[in-house]
Length: 290
Image (cartoon, rainbow, N blue to C red; front, top):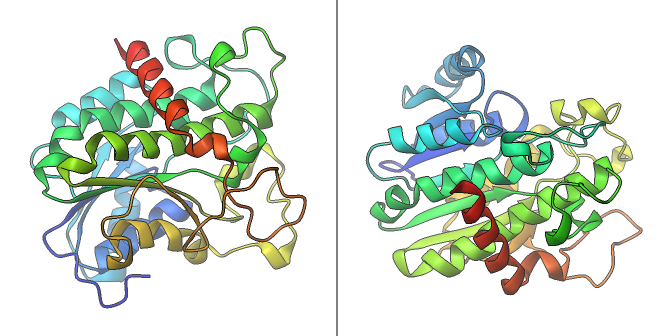
């Protein structure tokens, strides 16, 4: 995706980079010359990954810092501790389909709190560093799971409707797209562009609550293929100046008017790109952080 691209002098953060596509995204950026920070919940695991990446890429420009996106205090502390410009922020960490209703930070439903609120707090806290870069990219790792639910503003935390693991996951992934849409609208004038993506069906630890990957084999991706769209959005000159969009299979996804029943190119729901939804969610999240 970025063969021949030189990212020397650029600084990148990849959240959740101890397994799966987070590790591969970090490896690709490091191999292209970027300085990469692994923002991870378990620093000891991150150090093992960093050592392996140094061996594989021949680059020592990788470091590890603790970040638990399920904990707003951790997100605030990470952002406050960052110094200097930031050119690439890959919001990759996440959880999927917690079987029981769990309440995370400040009583919010755990998937929404982890997948969206933590990354919102991190992104907002790093705004100054992104602006300082003089050309930065935010990559929001969403999912085709967003097609299972819009953001239900009147009941974000399943206090009235029965908890449904897939609906909760879908809502959190829609929120991640809306984060990119609104960040791009607010900050593109500062040279900060943001896009979201669906990585595809990849066998990783993300499916630990689903009994493993259920997608038929012909539609599955390797970890390298799954990271391709993240890497493309993070470093390719092809998306220079492009923002507020949703990609899959290294292409901008079509807007669909219903959830597809067949596998393949799945598309993006209109509610996930709606600017009014994006602005409203940003305001709601800002109020939560106060």
